[in-house]
Length: 229
Image 1 (cartoon, one colour):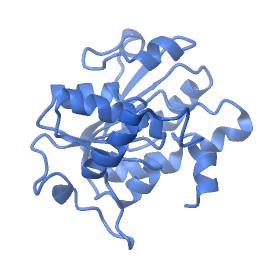
Image 2 (image 1 turned 120 degrees about the horizontal axis):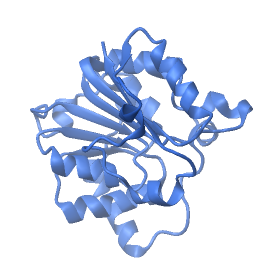
Image 3 (image 1 turned 120 degrees about the vertical axis):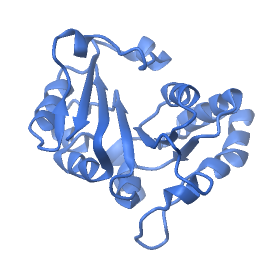
């Protein structure tokens, strides 16, 4: 995928100039944690990427981790799980690396490009949980094709997720919510777990708030939990 195509999918790669400490983390810590795709189309060896064996608690994927607060929180709470975070925005990656260093967690790997490229290389039935939290809503109708939640994306996640695995989605955008619900609830591989309004209005205890949410959320957030059938 060329750079112009990447920008249309998820926007810019950099924001304001990185501080020297942030650049140092990108230069030193990121190479130890970064997942790189095989030169030829091939399945990624996750056991090798996590030190020679698959994590006992399985592998979780977060698409678009922002500054990494949720990702690092989950890593601290679940040391038995291997977490893969995808984020192309390098300023966010640098902030996440700082949190990883402070928390001294060793169960995170990072992919700093479009998550769909990684998903194409992951093994089938390799993911026990997937998070897509407050993705860019691309609100203009002509940009809806750039949204991460698409039928093709769900089809691929259905291949990658284990039976019983959980897909967590969140949005505060009034146009993205019905889009998410229509695509997920009509997909044969996924079952929405909500039984009452409180299930999508309230945040689960193991779903921490982030500064991004506190600062940027414009409307009422909705939290969706789905299970891979």
